[in-house]
Image (cartoon, rainbow, N blue to C red):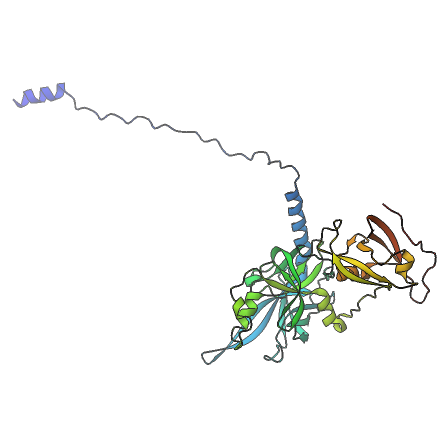
Length: 375
């Protein structure tokens, strides 16, 4: 019996398990760099190039300022540094940044300033201005040229504004916004620019520039930040604005230069005498603005009369600078040389006049045509 069982087992070998079907394999070709995506020139591409160029040219003018402060916490005195932004105003090493008001606490004898390349140097305060909370500092080792500065008079509400600051110790943060209002007030400070650029702790003291890459203001603060600092005011103060968003302010650079005029050796350029009185009128279709400048009176024998200006003329532009406010007119006159090309609207016609200014100490020229050519 055992022998027969062995013979049966030998005749019936054990069944082998079927092998699983081969797995289908997908060949993945090696990735090779393909041709670069060719994007046709566009407005967005030009905008991107301009933004990059603006930031590259303006970034060296921004510095990081670290101010030592002493805080009392649970009966202990804690020494620490706060980071602020600053803007170079002079090639000799003068820069402006928020500072400590002598009436609020001891002014630090020295602060440290960090250049755009990371180099850090000691600096000392020169003078503090309490109305706007700005301090002029000096560092002889800074070695950074001043950026181009320009008056903000030519900026219209809606004009692009570029800001660079050190928000939350993120040095050199770049933002884009627009001018939202002019001549705003915040506490004792007046004549401020209202902007839509976001403002965060550390941005105060940063730079505000126009689309030409000219610094037109120094970042001050946001309405929310100002309300947070004044929340303890028993009369309410700015408390209703603690939740405000996108409301920020800047000090016009002309105000900053006027405040520190003696230290900066700054003298406002004299404006030529024109000899006319102007008023603000409704905007003209050729300007695309809400207001325009109307000539209300022309003085006899003045450059305005010799150029052919008359009462009732609407001033449209001067040397291609649009005129829609008295500030715009003053700004254009400050840039004018011996003469200026004036675009006006008289009656139902556009006219072009040449406004010539006498040199100091010399009488006004008498050969100026009384009316200009039409174009």
